[in-house]
Length: 196
Image 1 (cartoon, helix red, strand yellow):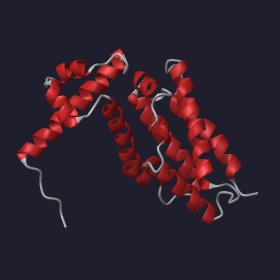
Image 2 (spheres, helix red, strand yellow; image 1 turned 90 degrees about the horizontal axis):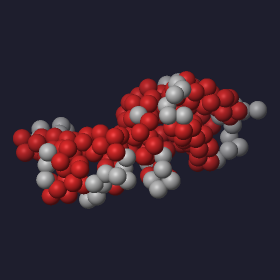
Image 3 (cartoon, rainbow, N blue to C red; image 1 turned 120 degrees about the vertical axis):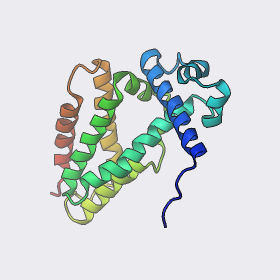
Image 4 (cartoon, rainbow, N blue to C red; image 1 turned 180 degrees about the vertical axis):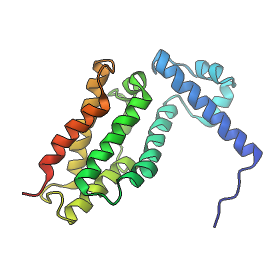
């Protein structure tokens, strides 16, 4: 069964939503999330405030969209890249992608996202978490990762380290190579997960 092609009206609606989202992200990078207003976003996107509210309930929905796009990226691109590799290699590759995604988002954006006010990181069942848990569980079943650890706890441990590295990168205004640093730190942690 194939998807029906979008109508011109649906295509236009998607373009408008994307324009609003892009304008909001650009403004977040320059003004910061807390200083951003719906009026600012609407003006930058060349839409009415009412049009903004047609696509988003609040500016917090922009943050939700950022996390949704990250989950989509990990569900498609990252899943395809890590499959058919040993589990420990998959874990390192996973966080190579995680670092790259943050670099592409930029220091200003990640500063907004890595605020203690943003709770999307800890929402259970996000595709990013599910993929990582599945890699760990499969690695444990194949005897590549020690089985005396709960996969959910290992997911938490890996994310705590990775978020800490990104937070540190933000503190240093992105002055060092996040991808290289993340790769090195994750590799060191992952080396402790081999069966004894």
